[in-house]
Image 1 (spheres, rainbow, N blue to C red):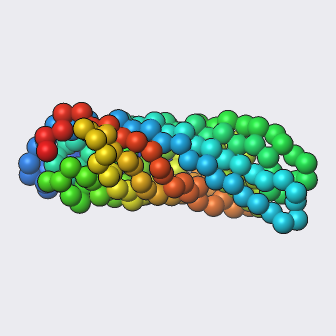
Image 2: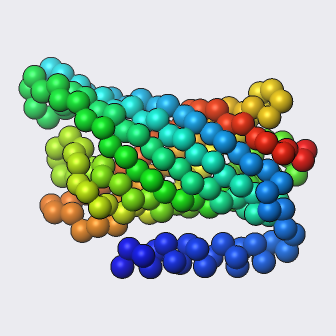
Image 3: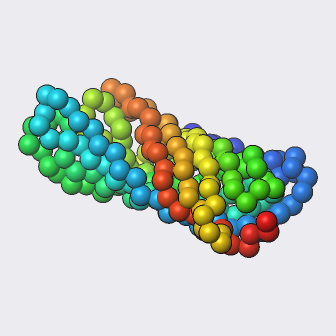
Length: 190
């Protein structure tokens, strides 16, 4: 079942490019990195669960509005919001591909909607702190804005949500992340 999601995404890209009508393959190359931190307090437990995500990505324009890219997320966690005195540290990885649609194709800034598919080992499962489960698949979506700062450099502001596709018992919940980072655009034609 998992490969079907990837195949559906891969088949959608050429259709979207054809619908756009205008090719712009490689006219823009966007390289980005962000670091975000999330903490979860629990008044019943004296310590806190902390999570820091470092994301690296690269995207290439297919048309003036459409981009395809690859991403890698390192997720570092420590502490606990459910167990007293626990200060375990862990590191997780998510690897994925994404499609972005830019609503401002004629502008230097980018207002984007994103769809993605990831594989990884970060399980936001049950009522516990997140933990490792190998072979997870995630279907994601997001919104973002690239605010130009200086000569191809832009402030990347956004939000992503990743739904776990695997059947996890008792349940899994969506892994969400706010994004504050920097993007650098090469071959900018604007």
